[in-house]
Length: 149
Image: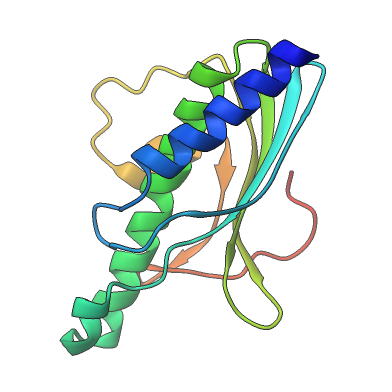
């Protein structure tokens, strides 16, 4: 149990260090919950907001950047989960858009066994093949309904 606690604290530190800034947003990733139980984990966080410098962009371009950053973050968190927590075989992941109430935009049960992603250039397809569920409408992540994990 102490080993798992150390691994979990290392995971949280790594998230703070590696994901302090995104590729398309300078906002930090805000973890909400990480839970480990036997060989599974649950991880939830808020998607990063738009970068302040994107204020002059058209709304559609700003939304595309927010969505792409959220998808990139999902892949990075998945990778960190499995690299930092060696006993974890599956993880239930949920990503929310900040708001009142928060909106679920990405969810899924991801597995340690990574699908072959060689030759797949599309970020959207890579994310879907890893087990994440989401809906894109003209580049904007839509709110998910129901229990998808």
